[in-house]
Structure formats: structure tokens, C-alpha cells
Amino acid sequence: MSRTCRECGATEGEFVADKANICLLCKRAKSRAWYRANKVKALAASAIYQRANAGRGREMAKARRLANPGVEAEYQRTKRAVDPDAARAREKDSRERRRGPIKVYKAAQHKAHPEVQLEKTKSTQRETLPTADRSGFEWAGWEFELVSDYGRSARALARQLGRTYYAVQAARKLLRNDPKTIERAGLSKSGIL
Image (cartoon, rainbow, N blue to C red; front, side, top):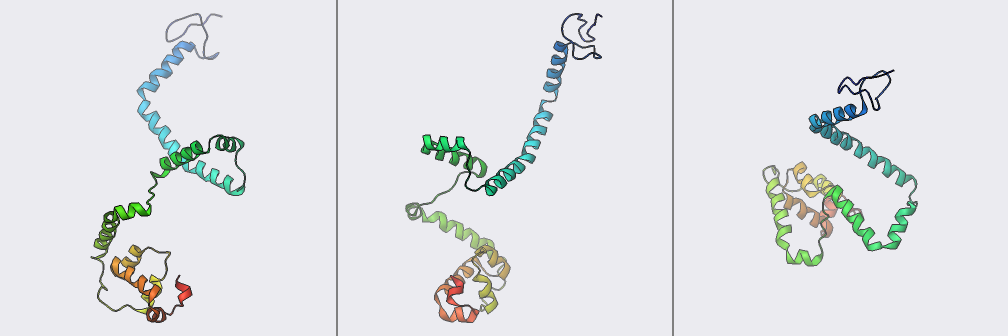
């Protein structure tokens, strides 16, 4: 039985399927044309899919690592054993791609550029000034209890208590050094540090 392609009219060559009257060359050309016409949509859909499933892949990998804490893939051990410096560089690069470059400040850098840290604290102080409605009032014991929780940031505590950032830092310093303040807060010295 002779077949004729409905696109190009060819009677020879491979056809896509028994019932479809289209040759493989026309099918490929049609696919390429569709991809060119819808390239932006296809790439956007692919990117959305990858973003949606990237977190899932990381979660699954993390679950595998937690389930087998001492186990590492053989090829990873081999690569690390052959060139440990290159392995560290690869790990650092992948970490930076995920989270951005890691800022490591050494003591010398802090001494050389103290204005950077000072500007950060000043900007935080400026942020908390408008909401500091209890500024100038005496500190209550319950406020010292909240401030003694070092798991919370000084900025968040300043907003919650209606105090400034510097006031929260000063209160924390008092709690570390002043026995009267510690007693007033109803805490023990060992409970703070």
C-alpha cells in the first residue's frame, strides 16, 4: 500500500504512525516550528517546573542525608580524597550559588573597617526610633525577662517593647554585669549566660 504525506506529498520514506499520513521529516519540521513559535512559553514553563521541584529535590536529599548521617557516596569520597582543595572550592561555589557569597569577617577586617558595623547599628537605631514609645521610662522586670532571651534579635525586641535598639543592647549589657538588675529581673546569673 502506497502512502502519501499530507504535508509535502512524498510517497517514500518513513512515516510517523500507521494511521497518520505524515512523514518523519515533516513531523520534525513541524515540531521545530512549534518550538520556535512557543519558545518563550516553553522555557517559562520549564523554569516554573524546575523552581517548583527544586525545593522538593533538596528536601528529599536532606532526608536521605539525615537518614544515613555517616554515609557518603563513593564517588564523592574519591573526588575529595584525590584533591581536597578542589572539593572544598566546589562545595563553596555550590553554596554561594544557593545562598549568595558567604561573608566571612576576620577580626582584622573589623578593625580595618569599623565604620561598616557602626553604620549597620546606626541604621537599625534609626529604624526603631519612630516606634520607641516607651523611651525614657524606667525598665520593668518583665522587660528584662524578655531582653534576657538571647534567641531573639535586639531589633525585634526593640519593636515589641517600644524601646530603641541601643536601649535593648544597654539592657542586655546590664543583665550581664549588674547584680541588682539581674535580681530585679528575677533571674539568676547562670540563667542569663
